[in-house]
Length: 253
Image (cartoon, rainbow, N blue to C red; front, side, top):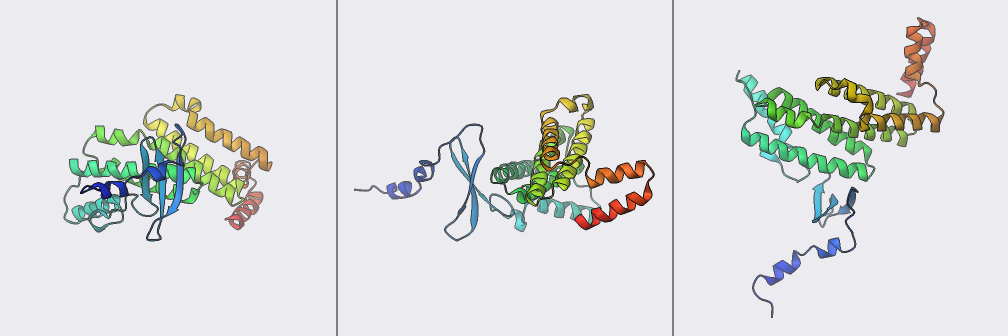
């Protein structure tokens, strides 16, 4: 005999999801599956079960106040405030909701990297970085600002990894190296913001990116990229060569 309520409990059991998917500490375990309605969703294995995330817009599938993301909603609120000539600053409730979205996009970014969906990882990293810029402008206090800015370096690192890998997939190693250079320069600004420039060369993220660059140069036998050759030609005031290199770069873009 099934007691009232027992059937619903059985139907909600997720043992069948976990039994053939062992959790591995320290490893990002993600997979793409098709939901019952046909849409594609992501599952992320965690210690106590599984997180399921939407693959587009907000990872939890919500539409905050009718918007694709909470960041989009806050942008609208700030525009309305400016239009009304009022000062806009995040409320406590808005800070909490912003934090929820930051965490959700972090989980999905990790999934995209694990799944080698590099373009989507770049997209989600760009959302987070834009949201961080928004927080920098409208944070209610320094503590809340710093609580987010401290992670900017990590987001930049992951974005650089993804962008470089995407170019390698497209057989464009020189562009991958350029992405690494651009990422390192943004990390330099991050370290400068915290007056930690002297620590940059010893930082694990920076060292990893430089290792990837060295590996790319060795694998593809790249001594100097076209962009680096162009900068050298300009430094040497060899403007005829610089013009040829600019043309070559345009053809590659």
